[in-house]
Image (cartoon, rainbow, N blue to C red; front, side):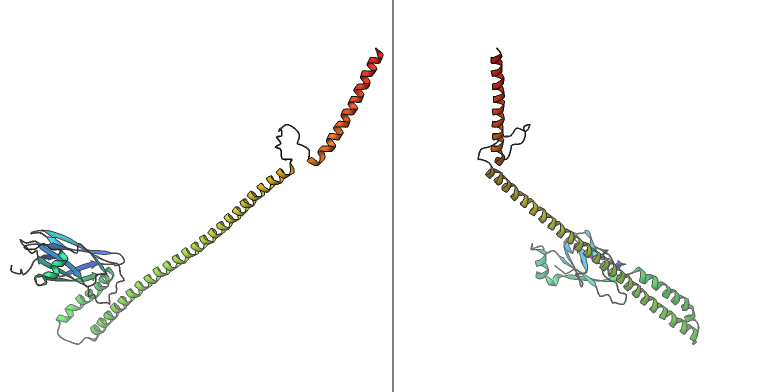
Length: 288
């Protein structure tokens, strides 16, 4: 089977544009189309795999089929002075008709059948676009003077140099502003972390105090639980061993050491009452 000159139609064909600012994830899309009558395998690679998320990064396209590929750029700090070297490569291969193997093994087995298409990444930041507008306006304004005869004009040279200097200062001011914003964000994050640590330490102190209070309460409960059996033992040792049931409406019982005196007084009173009753009975019988 002859090797085709072009297997897939890639849109866009040469570059992938990513629109800033790049503080959040930015997505760009690529469309792959199979214009042939064969099944085409494809695989997408990049020079910066940690900075991009590609879905799907490989697959199979049937004849006349198209698929959209989402390429997501992860957040990063954009520097206009840094040269962008990120690139993507789309590899494609006609599906072999005589074999049915896995996709990863297919790339290794038939490397000579691979077709490569490369795309470069372009970062478009709105701040840089706004700063580029005065420069283009200055260029268009000085263009008519260039059509005039070649005569030295010191004023134009001074104005051009001042414009270039102003653009350079503006770009540096943009970098300083971005750095100040980043420093402000970092300071706010540090303050928030400090506040959270203080709250965490306060919560730990409260937790320790609560644990101490719980231990104190447990100690008091254990002490009371020990005092109750000892009091019951002392009450049991003070009695004769018999169980005494007290009527709630009767007066409280006398102590053990006062019971003989009470019984002696009761005996004397009963004797005195008996003597009086005896005298009364004797006097009545005598009168009769």
